[in-house]
Image (cartoon, rainbow, N blue to C red; front, side):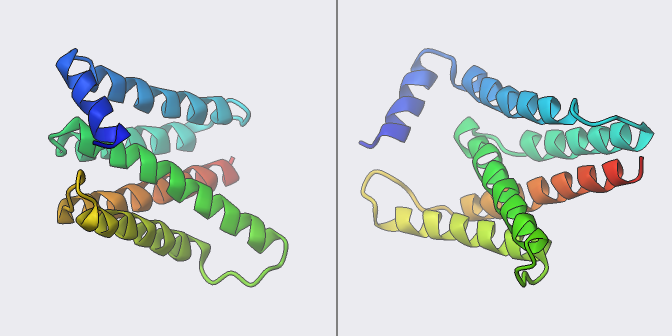
Length: 155
């Protein structure tokens, strides 16, 4: 058995799998807030932040298993990092075709490849829903990050 399923089993046996997920999600949230504190917040920023929290709350409430919820954190972070890298390339005058769509395609493709590779791994399982969660996480995180950037630009 690989590390991830073993860790999930141990956390579930001790009744702290959900708490661990919440702690991971909160740590990402703290980093986002920390970054946000470096900017002046206006009414648009608060409206966008509330919208993002609402959308993520709805998405996470529809995912039953905590293991599947981790896709939202993992591929959300990957999506924003890819998007930021593409924006940096664009600033340095590299030809980047639609950074938003390209980042979404890259993160979704990476998530799909990751899930397809699990088909051949003896201790992992392939699941079409996980591919959907990976794409959803990338799309939501990039859209949320872009919304925050646009709200900040209007201050």
